Structures are given as C-alpha cells and as structure tokens.
Image 1 (cartoon, rainbow, N blue to C red):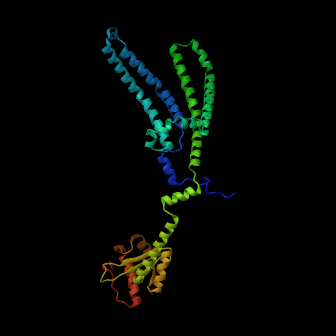
Image 2: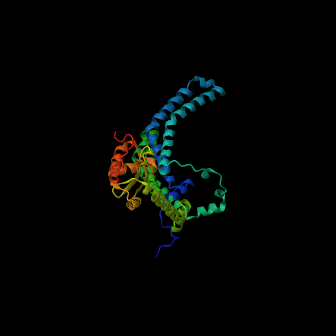
Image 3: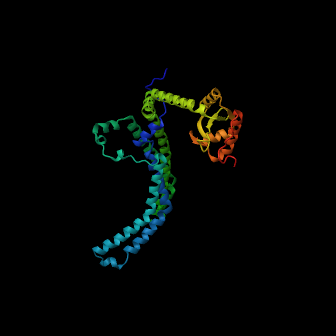
Length: 362
C-alpha cells in the first residue's frame, strides 16, 4: 500500500529534536534515578555507616554525659544540643554529598544539562480536574500502573529470598547480645536493600529503553511536516531553486567579464582553474581575477579557449592559489616565483616583453 503524507514514517529532524528539547520533551526514566540513589545510598552506608554511627555515638556520650546535665538550665540545654546537631550534620555531609552527586550524574547521563522555565512556571492546566482524570485514564498511565505493580511483586520476591537466605542467622539472635543483634539486622537490611536496588536498576534500564523508543516514535514526522519545516527553516524550495539559479547566472556572467581580461589560466588540470591578470603599470603583483572548481573550472577553460588565453597546467600552483587567494586579490609573495615563471612563458608565446613582479626573482 502506498505511503500517505499523513503517516509519521520519517525520523525527526535535528530542528524538531531541538525544539522538543527546549520544551522539556526528552527521553528519561525516573525509575533509573530512584534505583541509582537507592544503590548509592546502600553502598555509602555499607562503607561509611559504621564509622559515622560510631562517631555520632562518641559525640553523644561526650556532649550529653557528665554532671553538668544534672543542673542544666534551658540555655545550657539548647547550647549543647545545637553543638551536637551541628557536629552530627558534619558527619552526615559525606553521605548526602555522594547521594547528591549520584543523582546529578544519572540526570546528566540521561538528558545532559537542561533547564526549562516553562516546566517550573505556574500552569493552570495542571490542576484542571478534567485533564487530570484524562491523564489518569490514559494508556500511558495504565501502563505505568501495571509496571508499578510488577515492581512491587519483584521487590517482595527479592526481599523474601534475601531474608530466607539469612534465616539461620536470624534464628541465632536468641543467643546474641543486643549490640550484635542490631548490627546483624543492619547488615541484613542493607544487603536486602542492595539486592532490591540492583533489580530495580535493571528494570529501570528496560524502562529507559522503552521511554527512548516511545520518545523517538512520538517525534516521528509526516512528509507534510518535513516539507513545512523545510519551508519555514530554509525557505520555499521553489524560491530557493530560483535564487540558486540567479546566483549561478551571476557567477557565470562575472566569469564572462573577467576571464577574457586574464593573461593566463592555471589549471589542475580539469578540477580547478585560476585566471591571473598582471598589468605592471597598474598592479604591484599579479591578481586572481577568477577561480572555480568543477563545472566553474570547465567554464573558465572554455572562456579561455574562446578568447585565446593560454592555459597552463600547474597542479600544485593551481591548488595553492585556489585555496589561499580570493578573487580580485593579489597573489602572495610565496607564489611570486612560480607565477613569474608562468607569466614569462606566456609572454614569450605572445612575443611580449617580459616584465615580472618585483621580488619574483628572489
């Protein structure tokens, strides 16, 4: 069946992607950030938790112990607790700092740096009950609900298996001291949370893949949309074609006026052509009056043949002049010797007196 212009069968253009990004429409997974934060938090607690808790315990004993508390007044109480809370906050800074960095890293890896003022500005449509109900009953919302229920089941299974594997350790707590029991419960909890975090991270990767696919699908364009974008972004194709035709004609007209005045055309031999003119009484150095590549080079060669202008094949010189010298600009001093050699040859062919640019014999 023939493809219609209303089918979104074309990949999004860079311009459409940029406009979508400006509106905050990017492929992202909130579950990926949540799972990463959970894993990072558990790992940090495993590495630093015991050290931080022991430091806080020593701090509590040091600050809150002693006979001074027996006669403490309100001012003393507030002062001591302020010191305790300040030092506890300092001990917890590394943990929260690492969590903050992990959250920022996940966000940057997903969408890069992106700030959309429209997303934080007040929008009355967000509190519209009708639109809210439509969002709740949409296919996307139902899929999110199903995925959420699936995650709950997965979390329950992982937690059960993790606790089941440590069942013997938990039964042995009846013969342990309270401190040992506390550390055992902490260890079991952390490892259970780590396993849950890893499973949630794997599910979040799948969710991100789905969000990426959905994002690309939603951005796809119809043939008409591509035409409209090209018209708005680059201009009407017919107008552009006419403009290019006029520009080509102007270039050809300029070549028709300048090439006949040249003394020689240096070629490469067919890909490049550079027309040079030198009038000693008027110019300090030879001037490039025309140059071209491809079909323009062929045009310059034809004009040179029509007006009996010598054509000299000098591949390195033609490349250097085409690359380094603009039209109506004199040649650089580094090309004097090579151009002088060509002009001398041309002047001998025409029987003219050889007058070379100053410094060309250097």
